[in-house]
Length: 443
Image (cartoon, rainbow, N blue to C red; front, side):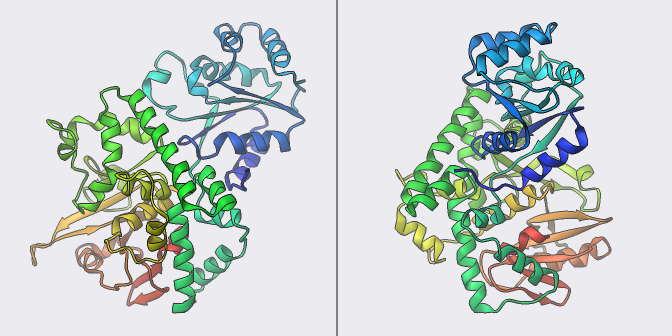
């Protein structure tokens, strides 16, 4: 099932602005729908297209890129193999899962210069060094990040094109919704948190309305990710770090504690591995800021980080990895917000996912208040204009915000806006804007 995706409009913009002078590389985690949306774009916007899936392309096709001195021969062979006519300036060639054929990626420089056709690439784990170490990366390649379906795309898939528009109006005009409507909207959003944004999981939910089958789809994706991590790191360290994300967040520690997952390892010894996991796009990394200000990237502490899962639906399934499947009654209790556990880390993960998909780098901040000798933590920091916007996340409707208050006292001159993300209706407490978690997308 093909779903409407926002990235399609960015493809259109690239096609118009580039006019064949660059190739477009669509990067993202496995199973987020890259190939599907790229092929839909090719089908709709070009007279013809050829999609080369390098996970199953014939050896004869892969060998074509060993020698690109005769492009006429290459194009002839592709048309014969895929039984498709190519039309100058009206056809698109797609290199799907291009990381499995690095020489095809290297050939982009010459293919773009030839200018007969347009080129798009899709890939996962693309920036891992072993996939590019022997090739010259083309400067003619423009990269774009794709993420799992966001909440608005999820609502579109369910046939709802109205809710998000109204929520945006409510946020921008500061118009609270009322407790009854907020409860309904929170239940709707928790459904998104449970199903997630992986297209196959969403499709399974729409077609069956059976959370057990949805869960099975998500477990299959998780097995695929773990297999990928074993390719990155055959020692199994990356896989262990990934599987331990829920338990690490549940501890509410000020950072991911590598030593509690991998014996004789410290955070400083796995920085390269963390970088490779982040490159896979299956993991989101939030780094501690040493000095919160507008230039957050300059204050990144590489040895102090938190890990999140790229899709909160997958994260929910990982919470119950000790079971063969996540029973429908557990999903129902999660949906109704009646599961007797503190799920603050689940909400923290979905906020991380939303912020990252909106183009934000992830940062957090911890500090010791000298007066109270209490440790405070801001879950996320956003850089806006020449200041920062601190965010505190709660899994409940409690309006207390001790961390925001302490941070405000310490760094008042650096703050543009302050946000409390929680489960209740839109509200204000002096200069703090309290927003229901489903409005995080508007920050």
